[in-house]
Image 1 (cartoon, rainbow, N blue to C red):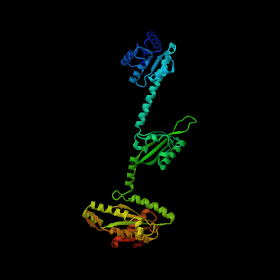
Image 2 (image 1 turned 90 degrees about the horizontal axis):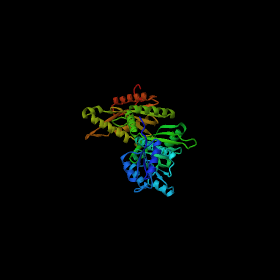
Image 3 (image 1 turned 45 degrees about the vertical axis):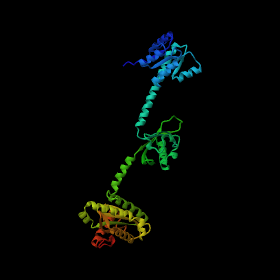
Length: 439
């Protein structure tokens, strides 16, 4: 395709000057349109597109200043307008720029250099157009980025700030610029950011650091990525940081973790969680030479409740039992009822009507029996379900570490066996594995 030649509008009331400018500019490779005065210039400009206007200052009717102002208002900021004037005083030059002129050319004109001067004006105009386009692309990219974008120095001072929405910031964006992280962020968040800057300074990039930030509309989670910015030699390092809102992802992760480790009906830890906890506590107890107790609890007569009142009533009882474990069998409550000081009891649901309890740092079997007795008391209190008072009892089996096993599976199995012995002994009681026949 053949490139379109630039079009230039030449406005001058002097016919000789007009013709000589047309010759010089055509020779330089431009398409030239002539206008005899300001009114003609406005008419010609309205009839076609131009890449440059060369405008005489002193003309009858509308002056060059007036025409320049009208053209500028119509065309916007980018059109190059060169004022051609025989006046070289500062006041005239300032007036030309105030009217919207891009440049001025003094008379008498140097015809040999005129084409070069115009070429320079058009090149500058093209550079400005490309700069505006690049800026527009940059702004479009920023608008499309859903993340917080910061530029910082190594001290954690904000040099620039962009946010797709003010809801992701604790302050308006302009209040970040010029201030340190420690001045606008909580200490723990600022520490995460400064750590990421140091890593990016040493390695070029830093990824994956997360922080939680309290905003006016609630807590949000962010993931921080930092990259060291290319700078000239000897210049202070600068960094680009992206903070992505990962609150939804964190909530999904938390729900997944809760589903994996907690019982959906009661909210208590489930079997997987309980077994892992026993394993961890065995390691601590072994190191500190402490003893643990695992209790296996079964609700006596629960199957009859399901059979007569239905599973929905049974679910309500299981939820109420879990609430009693959480609220009425707290450590402070246990201590107030003559259990050893500092005793910690943690409950879980294995499934059905089977619950477990882990007692930490017991002195001996008698401590576990005291806790089991307290559980029995609490569970004998009637449950009010659908307007009916339902009374249940609990059979409890107890296994001790290290007396009755050295791993979680063995302890739970022995506690289960002791629970069945408690049922055989008449229910509503507790049995130690070590006290079972042939244990």
